Length: 623
Image 1 (spheres, one colour):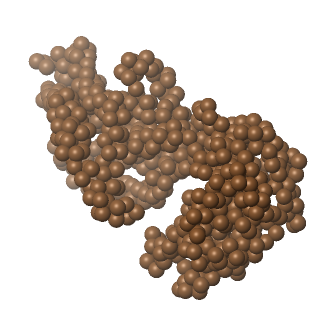
Image 2 (cartoon, one colour):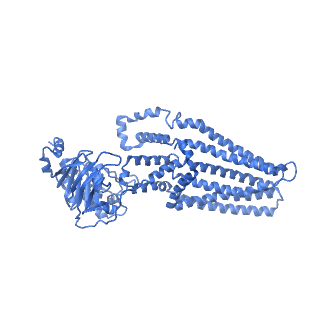
Image 3 (cartoon, one colour):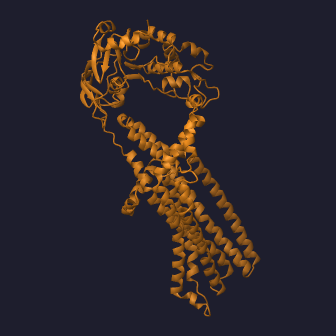
């Protein structure tokens, strides 16, 4: 945020935005907030009890020195200290337990938002850039919503520190010096001057620190750019296993030498932040420390002068110095917190900009009829689609019907609209024009999740997790072992399954289990196909399902395709036209339109068609 915009920002707006962020945290994790509030209040107030009791003991030692009274005070102090220590230990244990997954809890806001967001927004590069920016805010200073926990703790600490300190300090200003040379210390004007000096220095020290922090806030974009470059270099050169071989073969680490040699980068010795730390940033921090020392000098001088003049006994000296120093700490912390509240606003705005992305896709209410005969019919009627912000039609005037229980192949060049067609079918997108019907009803009227349940899809960029094989097949923690094994065998994974040391309980990869097994790309693809079969949906969509398979495994999948899909309606996307022969019907896409439709034999016989062109472009490699 620019400085002139910051000046326009009212404190009402600052409080509103920070309050909204805090309410988000409290509504979701009330125990998290309480686990920070109660221990903090305990930690802040208990030292005052020790200060008070210590002052009584010192006063007794400097006064009458009554042994019985001293014994009583020491015993009370020991018992109270033991109780306070026990309470602190229990509260700290509770706090650590509740906060053990703090990072995950803070990240969950954004994960839940992503999972519930319309897919068309997930596909938007601007949304990804915003989300990445927020992650950089969190890692580079913990700004935004996560910062509010720190601000909350410091605010509680500041307020209770001030209250506790004032309670034990009031008598410092109300106690009167006996008549004599130092009677001037009783004059209200003198006390006013002392208070002004004290609170002036109390305010100035944190204000200087806040001023120093403002620079980091104003230059957060440059810091994010530096983090991105640093992380890229680290990922690129150090531990990205999928890049390691390529980096070594082509010596691509040399790309980074230019940036490593440039000492004017954000985090280098001659960079922006280093120069600021050495100049104005260093000045503000040093000045803050000097002001703090000056305050301590004023406190000691005033307290000792009143004690010397006879306003109170030596025991109260320790009480007043310790208490007023804590009041100083509390006020300084409060000023610092107020500065943090303002500094945090630009980051909160970005957080809320992400969290407030609206879901515009209608969710529907009708229940999809669960039919044992899988008698579903899907029809595209004049369907056109273009991506938000684009003037180019990704699909234009698509009209077609799926014949129940048939095998449909979808082919075409890259960018011809095949994947968009499938995403519209699965209702990841809604058409810009036209409508898609399921059994004669617009799919927008069906409950969104209910409609998606009738599709099993193996996307080209599918994901397997480092959990057990069975859990990956079932896409869940609990699963039917026999059913999972059957699906794996159908997908051609039977021989590999027999070699698994713990069958379907064998972990994939070694992220969470030392005995996990590594699998090839082709094996992963078979597991993904098995996952689609396990879901047992009426429609099965396979996007390049044999791309990572060797010729033998690919031939096995083709030969068993009927057994794999059974009575389901199968939609098969492929660049390998030779694999389309086993399909009943073929859709040929070109520039967002269906330009041909028919069987392989009929389409290849049309010498002037797009399919014939694509077929002959590949056929030369099979002769």
